[in-house]
Length: 192
Image 1 (cartoon, helix red, strand yellow):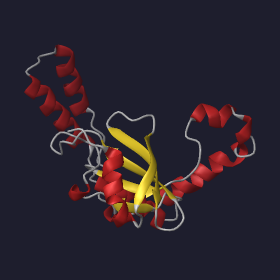
Image 2: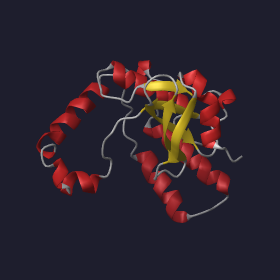
Image 3: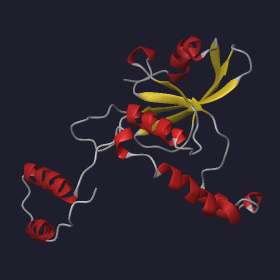
């Protein structure tokens, strides 16, 4: 189903504290996800926001992707742990007409690695970037897994899952049979 994103955002604007949106535009990148930038207007100062939404509904039975609700919960948990995050504004609900998604604040910056490593504008940033990334990752790694909506899997469970997919395909490939046997004989021990 095709969604008129600007129209749906305009309809949602009062729930976000505004009267409408301007400059709604899809950003580049993303195969299964869409990212839209827009400006919320009519509630004081114009507020730039980001919509991240799943372009195609996720099949929870076959997908290994986290839901958008899980992603939003992870953003919240990372922020609570002291990692810099874009503030979560809204987890989209079915009546919003946007599908599965969430809205966050807009954070200005650069995402293209080649620009970060080569553009002279980032000369001042580059010497500190690795340390800053390490500090942020350290904060993220303090989040207890129990405080997240993530599920865990071990090597045995993943091997069982992939073998079931292979067996259900009806294919018979000797190299895959040998690979499965080898992997079963060499499974690493489960880790917490």
